[in-house]
Length: 496
Image 1 (spheres, rainbow, N blue to C red):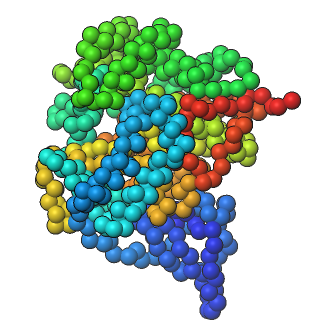
Image 2 (tube, helix red, strand yellow):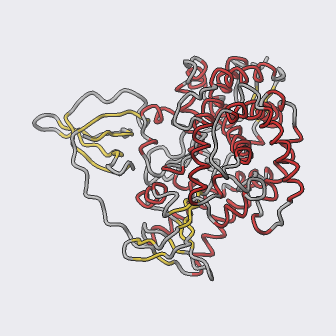
Image 3 (spheres, rainbow, N blue to C red):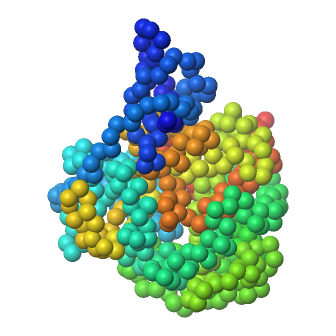
């Protein structure tokens, strides 16, 4: 038994005994990914739902045999330059650790992520589906394009595919030298367990859900009733929410803490090309340490006080990453509002959603993160030599997974450039190896449910506060591959 995750817009009836109908769809495969498949099924009424959008039907079909793993292919210098200049450079220029608003605006205007996807499609057509080995002196770097390879890398973290790649360590050590993402071995395992425990990684509702949602609603209620909601106003409110959730109400107005973190993140964009500002980092960490020591009840800092930590974990040293990760969630929340403000029907559905989980709003946030992933490229580094269809890649190989390409791969999904939250309600994207807005496998973000709880509660609260919220510049399909969050301006009042 398999489930059609997306039913096609059209199906061709075939006359004859039993009235059968032939349809092409995407079937959830045994590995968890979605694979194209044609199947003849008994003629039944067309599944309910918008044609071409997420509906499900469980069928008895035989899946095609899994293809042999394709070999990694070394691409030439010219193709390496095309990939580096057209795919990797725009991603790096936009700011991997801290977004550069002007570059993001330019990337949207020039549609650089779509251009990068076209380059990858051409390289894939020319060289095959296996990992593309770039021609780089002294380095072993591959770009992973095939869904089965994506699944293998993400499922194989942290060994043999470590999250602490050389580039990631060089960047994140600017402000979180003891974070779990830059750790390896036993200390990484201990830090990950600590993060999982404090953040309630596997719980849809964090143990502090009542306190967290109260904070979110209170800050949304205090938002000035201006005629429009723009990024500066939204971000200021979001950062107050983040500081209260993580460190407590005492940190609500500590904008200096956020400013110092952003300065460190600006430097982190340059990784090992810029010296670390240890004096600034020390000052920032001391501010964090003070809030953690105060352990305000109802905050993550308060939860930390009652959570045992193994030696070397450095509990307060995990906090900078939480503050950093929440920043990207704010971008996604405003983008979600922009999408809902462009679609009155879905905005009405979201406004009437059921608390406390708000399943439809949550699906909207998840699809927004698919459309515009906050991590444009996921990195892993092999700890041992690995075999790829008879090709051996040495230990220390960097594996690049361009999520901005995979999440919009029109050859692997229907409506890649459409806003499709209904698909998440059916569970289809969660079964796809190439859709991983919060990463996947053992390295999945431990704060994913906490982030979803916070953002969905905020969106629901703002829709209740501003029932006429709309996007004066509606987002229309096909949606852009880059969306400048800093340029969004949403009307909060009905035009006279």
